[in-house]
Amino acid sequence: MHLPQLEDLGDLSGRRVLVRCDFNVPLSDGVITDDMRIRAALPTLRYLIGAGAAVTACSHLGRPGGRPDPAFAMDPVRERLADLVPGGALLDDLRFDPGGAVARPGCGARRPAPLGGPGVQRGAPGGIEVHVCLPGLVRLAGG
Image (cartoon, rainbow, N blue to C red; front, side, top):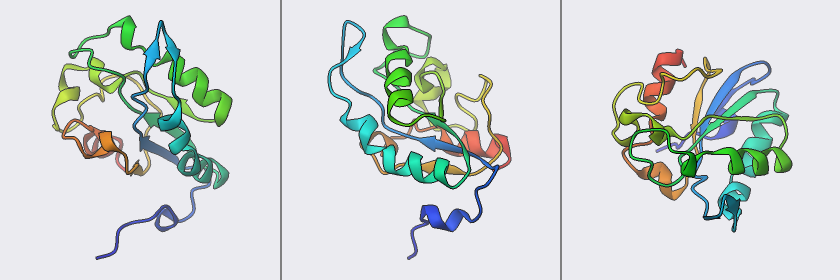
């Protein structure tokens, strides 16, 4: 069985790519105490950006219960990600959407995002859970 690789995506110049990452990092008073999960995604993100793709990452942070909660805002992650790999974008917490906790088509897709290309599922602990949302987002985007 062939597992798809990033190289299988072909020419990425000018294409938009959605990457589901596990950025569920520990915070203390809104400050990241360990950015290992963010750093783990860097090779994937750098490869895609280096290949000319417009990259949008998505993740969750904590368990906000299907509604926006400032305690779980992705701002600290977004700032750290921008320091480590400029040129990407990060969606708000997938679990802010009530459908973000179940695998249904398009969960989390109500907020605007620069989609329309392939989706990449990073092999991370959060990636194997049923609430990843990536298949629905990619279907809605036509990827």
